[in-house]
Image (cartoon, rainbow, N blue to C red; front, side, top):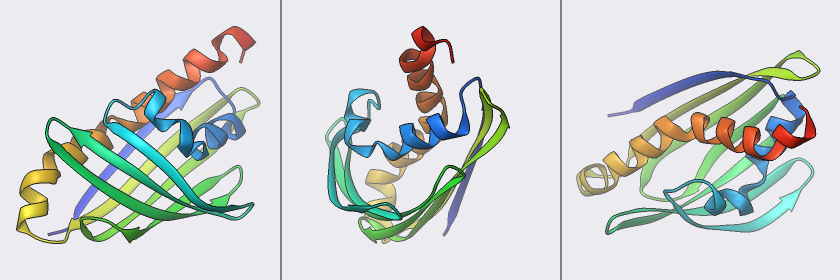
Length: 148
C-alpha cells in the first residue's frame, strides 16, 4: 500500500540557500537524529546519487536515491536501492523574495514487503514527517548570524 507525505514550511532564507542545504547530503548526520551515515556515490551539476543509513533503536536500513538537481527550484528523488518497492520524492523551493521562500517536501513510498513495513515503517515515517522542520532549524542555526 503506497504512503504519501506532504510537508510545507515558510522560511526566512532564500530558495538558493535552502536548495544547497538540502543538497548537502554528506552533512545530514550532523543534524538529522535518525541519519547514522551518508555516502555520496556520484555527483555532477545535474545529479547526485547518495545513500543514507537510517537508524533508530535497533532498526537500521540503508537507502540509495538518485536526485535530479533543478537548481535552485527543486530536487527530485528516485529510489535506486533500499527496503522499498517504490520511493519518489520532490523538494520544491519557491522564492517569496530575496530572503524568504516556501519549502515543500512530497514523498510517495511503498515498502517492499510486510517485514520492511513493520520494522522500518515507523522509523521512516517519523523521519519523513520531521524532515522539513529539521532542515528549517538547521537553516536558522547556520544562517542566523549572517543576517539572512
